[in-house]
Structures are given as structure tokens and as C-alpha cells.
Amino acid sequence: MLKVDQEWIDRVDAQRAGFRETVERWDAADLPPCPSCDSHDTARVSAGLVGRSIHLAAATTKIRLLPNGHPADYYCNQCKSYFNGPDGGQVKDMGQGRHAQIGEPLT
Image 1 (spheres, one colour):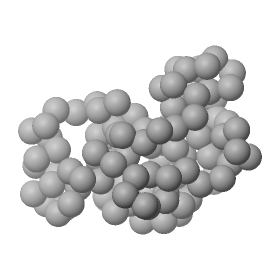
Image 2 (spheres, helix red, strand yellow):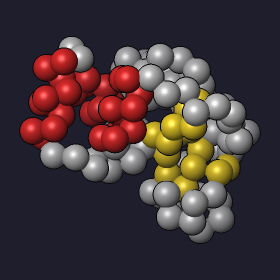
Image 3 (cartoon, rainbow, N blue to C red):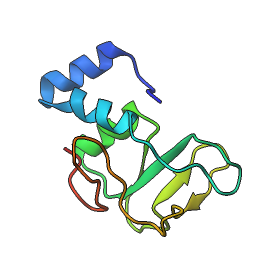
Image 4 (tube, rainbow, N blue to C red):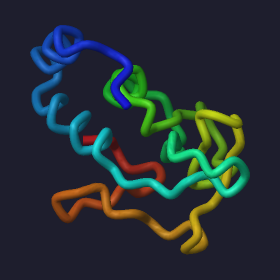
């Protein structure tokens, strides 16, 4: 779910070409529900804090950044718990044939 308005995304996209498409791809991601509370308000976990990923995490609830470490592949925004997907934590398709790998630059 988006956390910012289109004007904010426009400003960041002006500084970081392609940012809008990245946000749209991540925001449309089909992530597994939380096994604890069954919420679909979940996020992919990514380690590292760099400019583009910080802006992405500010824009959508579908990504959760950690400065280091990787407790699990997903995070529930409702019950605040980390979990691995039903596929055992395998990488999920993020659209357009791309896969989000842990530690991969978020482009």
C-alpha cells in the first residue's frame, strides 16, 4: 500500500529516474499472508540502507528495511512479526520477470 502521495513520488522520480516504476512494481507485488494473523498487509524484508531503498520503503508498505541482518524473508505490518513464505522462503516474482533478491540493489 502506498504511504505517500503522487507529488512526493514525482519529486523523487525527478531525482532518481525510474523510481515511479520501481514503486509501482513493488506496490503491486503479490506477497504471502502472515501465517500468524492471516493479514495480507505484509512486506518483503531487505537488508541495507541506501538512498533508493530508503525512498522506496518510505513510499510503500511492501518493503521493510533492516540496517543489517535478515531474520526472515517477510514481515507482517499488522502483528509486527517476521516469517518465511509457504514456499520455504524462495524468491517471489516481483513482476516483469524480475525477482527481488535479498541484498540486490532495488532498481
